[in-house]
Image (cartoon, rainbow, N blue to C red):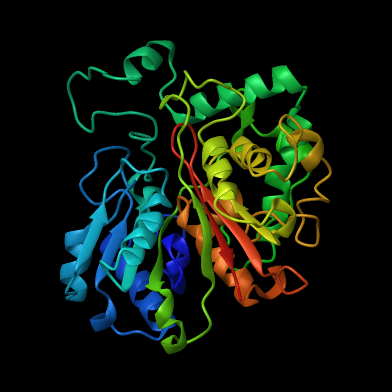
Amino acid sequence: MPIGERAAVLSGIGQSKVGRRLGVDPLALTLDACIGAIEDAGLSRDDIDGLSTYPGGMIAGAPGFTGAGIPEVQDALRLELDWFCGGAELPGQLGSVVNACAAVAAGLARHVLCFRTVWESTAQGGGSRRGIGVSSGGGGGFRASGFMQWSLPFGAASAANWIAMFARRHFHEFGTTREQLAWIAINARRNAARNPGAIYREPMSVDDYLAARLISTPFGLYDCDVPVDGCTAVIVSAAETARDLRQPPPRFEAVGTALRGRPSWDQFDDLTTMALRDAARMMWERTDLRPADVDVAELYDGFSFLAMAWLEALGFCGRGEGGPFVEGGARIAIDGEIPLNTQGGQLSAGRLHGYGFLHEAVVQLRGQGGERQVPGDPRVAVAAAGGGPLASSLLLVAD
């Protein structure tokens, strides 16, 4: 009998409409995705006995960062739950899916519905930029605490600033260039052109990339992901239920959640990488598969450098070799050595905050990618999310 994450399969996927400033209630988006995932798995609401989400519906932060929590979804779907979990202190957004795997493996639930909702585009639209960095959410004074008390006085109010400093260190140590980093964004746009649901599909050249306004050196506009409204849902089920599902589900081969360095945005032991180094290492420690076995990589690109850092951490290229590896785009193209972010990633398809990568990994393993389908019947996929001190990765295998 399989143990650990191998006791779980990914039985269903669902996604709401995704777009810019949809003006749709975030709970409605959540329910669309959740019901879609249940139907995709061939289950009914009566089968769902677990719920898991990141970060939940009660966290403060940028407007639209969260759209629904456990109580709202349970009540709206009239679910009877044996287990549930939601919270922000997880190893990245996909930590909520890892939690679901653990619950299934422990016998606490058989079918866990996992979801992530964002509606940042509507919440931060209308000409207002309040909350895109850090805000108290109201009038009056704001006194920073924790990490922010040291970064805000220097104007570093956003992850764009913090991740940019990691990128600058990588540039300094390894000679990485903006012209090389450009290919993460160009590849995403090239793939988005084949995805009818992507936000930005028009062609992009290196010159287009370099001409865009700078956001936080070395990041320009096209290094930053695209805020959208939308929800993605997946169902994690006990492996023994596979024969009862609508279609053969990919199984979880290994997960990575480790944080072996300092839990800090600016005091990590290697400032050319982040916690994703440890998550990737842990994942490979839990399987006999190797990077060469992976057919498709769906890697977090909240900022372009994060995808490059994941490529290095996961062993698709050596430490410091990310720039030359992605240069020219051939190795990371859909028909390349390691197809990367086949739906367009968050840089062009829209910021679904990690969950979109897991959804796309399943689409590719099922052979349902349409024009963006990776050739050659892919059987192994990695989905990874997170930056700074938060990271998790999932290795999926289609049997």
